[in-house]
Amino acid sequence: MVFSRRSFMAGATALGLAPKLAFANAAEQLIASESSHQIAPEAYPATSVWCFNDSIPGSLIKVKQGQKIEREFVNRLPQDSSVHWHGIRLNNAMDGVPGVTQDVVKPGGSFDYHFTAPDAGTYWYHSHNRSLEQVERGLYGPIIVEEHELPDVDRDEVIVLDDWLFTEQAQIHGDFNAMHSLSHGGRLGNYLTAMTLAREPLTVKQNERIRLRFINVATDKIFSIGLHGFEGKVVALDGMPLVEPIPLDHLVLGPAQRADVIADVTTEDGGLATIVSHERSSAIVLAEVTVSGKASRAKRDEMKALPLNHVESPGDLMKAKRAPLLMEGGAMGRLRAGIYKGEELSIRDLVRNGQVWTFNGVANITDEPLAELNLGEDLVIPITNQTAFPHAMHLHGHHFQEVLADGSLGPFRDTLLVNRNETREIAFKATNPGSWLFHCHMLSHQKAGMKTFVRVS
Ligand SMILES: [Cu+2]
Image (cartoon, rainbow, N blue to C red; front, side, top):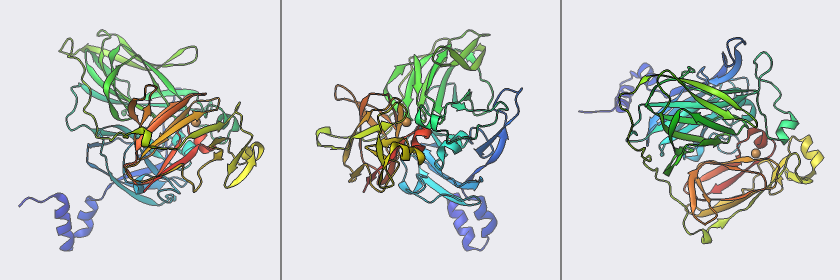
């Protein structure tokens, strides 16, 4: 007789042998706690952080496509918390949004998360309570959902991009209410990192083919990444494989966005390849990659696209529901007044409540969704950014597509950068029932008002 581990456990329970064995079968834990890690160069002290499983980035969660992810989240922080599984099309009750899909998890409390990961790709998890503070302090980690058939690469590396606002002693600056950053481009840091999971510099071989999974976990920074000494293609965005991989020039990643790159190392044996961040008037080297030795094969075959995930596109957009979203507010914006908690407030009173941004004239989430949808219905959201800053709009529970100028649909994404004075249209088929947050993933902007939701029933 063949039986699974689980059925054996059930049998053991029936025989009264439970406690020890059942415990061995419990979900793995994801423990959020205070810790200390060397983030800045060695000349500086270690940084006090909050993180998952005592690790920055938090421990890797890796499953095969279609498998379950099960974690007992344990909160050992001095604050309420929760975990959001960014980009995974999961069941609503597991989405980790306090006040919308669950209650906060109190200090000392725990919550069992369990869901299936239907799509292969690069995702991440992070705190979704007081996100600006908790994500900034280090509460994030990568998720890899592996394809059934792995692409032909020699190695697979996660690169977590972060932007830290440090004090002179390399401690996380504790002012999360600074109105200047909330009302401008968000909390921007003074120390950039591109971290591998081992937090060690990479050593590669010439001609090696590498998959690099970039995840921008920064609270507010838009990274513009350059890769020198690599030749390849972007094969996936926000987890979802691209039908046509795009040439790797430079990579713009807004907060929460991901890009999978498959590239060959072109730097000669003994040289250095680099990953840089393009800043306004300079480029900062985020990582030096040592090239040592030569991979046996000289030149590889053409890079192939990854197998597509099965996400349904919206149908006839002429018949779709439309829910326009107007973004206003912020510094240099035109906002005079806005609704907050059901009351019309002047800009002065909004600021007094820490609110400076509105969606359709309303600051922060209310009981009113942006759109009510029936399961299977299509929604188009024209997003008009009338502020002086870019915003990274993230939809929970679904991937959407941008409606391009010629009417065709762009790649599936879960987060879209909308620049100032732009109107961009996104569309998706409501395939997942529940209340799904739709918010700016610049966590400063989210905190200061940019948050709504859609309801699918
Ligand atoms: Cu924003």
